[in-house]
Amino acid sequence: MQHIDFELRGEFIPLDALLKATGLADNGGAAKALVAAGKVQVDGQQELRKTAKLRPGQVVAVAGARVRILPPGSGPAVEAKAE
Image 1 (tube, rainbow, N blue to C red):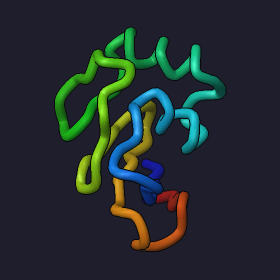
Image 2 (cartoon, rainbow, N blue to C red):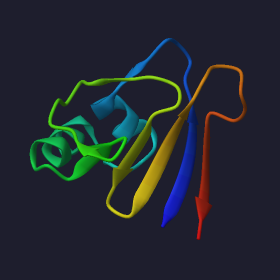
Image 3 (cartoon, one colour):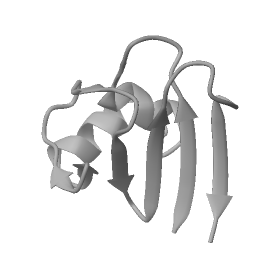
Image 4 (cartoon, rainbow, N blue to C red):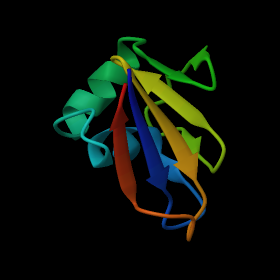
């Protein structure tokens, strides 16, 4: 499973924007389709809101990857680790 740490630049990031920013979706349409198809989990629960606001401490799981949301100033913007 791929693990990605994503550092926020502001207070939150919309779910579809996170999927694009981390490369888990090729574009906004693909990100929204993943969410609409029920393939995305936030903190272990299925998330169907395409623009759900994600904040530090939350974990997003999709397609064999986990993204941990970090607060601003905590490290690199996107760091991927393969296991």
